Amino acid sequence: MSARTLTCKTLTCQVTAVEDLNPDVFMVTLAGRAEAMQHAPGQYLEIKLDDATWVPFSIASCDRGDGTLELQIQHWPERDNSQRMRQLLQVANQLTVRLPSGDCVLDTQSERPLLLIAAGTGFAQMKAIVEAALRDQPSRPISLWWANREHRDLYAEDLACEWAQQHDHVAFHAVTEFPLTEPLAPGERIAHHQGRVDLVLESELANAPVTPSDCDIYLSGSPGMVYACVDILERLGGSNERMFSDVFAYAPRPH
Image 1 (spheres, rainbow, N blue to C red):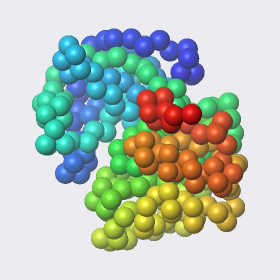
Image 2: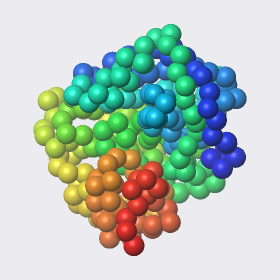
Image 3: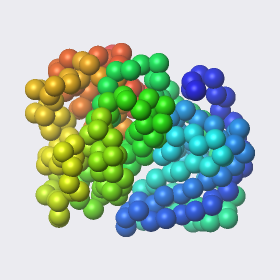
Image 4: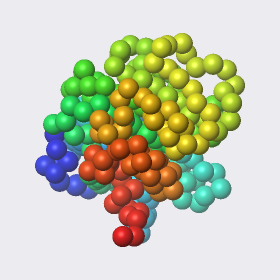
């Protein structure tokens, strides 16, 4: 499925489940007409908050074909829009959404190893890409780096560790600024690094057997985080043409 073959549509869907993943992040499941809910892995949707406000969220699931999809949403109690969104996202509520949007999608024509780098709820976009790759390109190597401030922010740690434990071509690297409160699950492809993600990448990838120049690289996080990582990855041989991020579209660097 190509992002370019899918037309962005406005439709009504229903909230079918809401689950807290940690004190700050919650998962929402939406259901609508299967054809209208189609999307490519890595795309996002927008939820209508009011007539003047549409809020984008990465779709945290690959296309399931049944009209359901998943979102992972950070709740900011001090922000008015976040409070209103939390009230809107209640089971059985009807939402107006438009989807799909975004060109940062998994290139299924490529067989290059995947280097996925996310911060915070940027994990949602990477989750959809991992699910699609495991389903459609089951032997494609995946290296997932997920950066957060502290251990409790790794709200899908169990899932990421499970991928690495069950698939011998998947590696999970957790990156936190503060020490872990307890060890990660055991696994030879599960690792923890303490520090800032761009600096960790600089030290860990410099002598890695698979280098950034070999990979298709997907990045999801704040513009500052993404561009700090891009600078490191370019120095390590990563190709601009094989780096993908929504940040490049909504916060382009001045030339």
